[in-house]
Length: 181
Ligand code: ZN
Image 1 (cartoon, protein in one colour):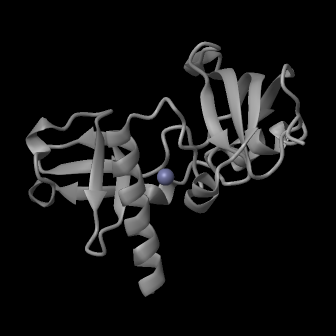
Image 2: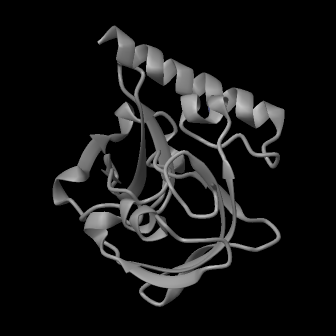
Image 3: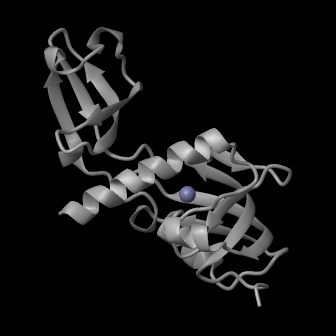
């Protein structure tokens, strides 16, 4: 039966996410957010709260940082010289940059400060250290396909092929990297 949320099921949600009273994200009922339950697609606090919920259920939950995007870590700040960063002249506080290390791992960072000679990058997730206030409605639940289980994410009808191919390729690369270690 797929009438209650459990691992291996694809769940459609409408939600509003507020942080410090400000809306930062939302999914509408006519364009819901879909995720694969039990695959770490969403923050742990929200996933736990959704387990056992049914279609039509609505609830509010306040997720502390530890069960959300983690505590804010002062160590995750790095100051790089401008010469180390391609395109450094275009960066300003708040710009999100992607960095790749020599092993091909990609990191996201937010520009915290710029100085005449350096760029200060913050590698914390943007919502690290924040309490996440969710207002959620469960819209639909369905079994995941074998492919979805294997990939650990949803292959919804909303995806266009190009995006899904890119996504899967990325994920496969990641898996390959892991296998080599
Ligand atoms: Zn996939």
